Image 1 (cartoon, one colour):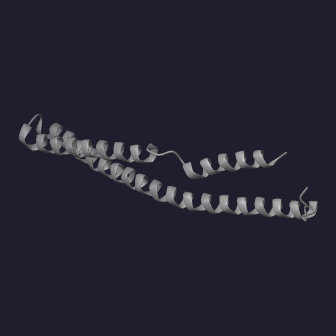
Image 2 (cartoon, rainbow, N blue to C red):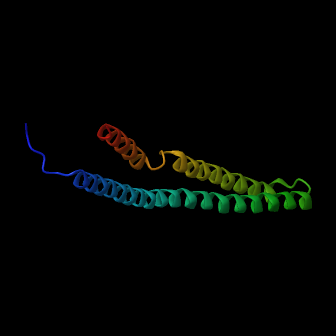
Image 3 (cartoon, rainbow, N blue to C red):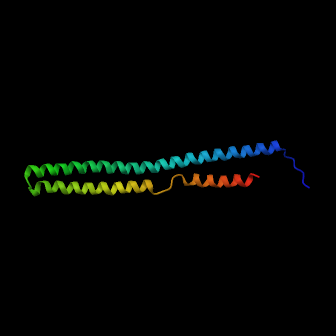
Length: 129
């Protein structure tokens, strides 16, 4: 029969140290993953901001076109150009807005942290008698 040199206190110390190391590693991974996610969210928010500005410009053009239409009473050459430009800018705003929304929803949030937390829980269950 092999002899065991480790006392219960030593085993508990090692278990506590392992748990502390595990928690520190999880916190470090969560921080790194959060920074990465914030960068990705920043890009999506920038696209949404561009869409909002483009939509505002489109509204100005469309309102200017409506004003010219009322003033000129259906004089097509003056306001038709403004309406077409407004419609194009609005179309650009829609496309950029959809791109921003798809960027924000494209990836699951913090996938590595979730996966390692699952692995750690399984490891801890396997070590617990």
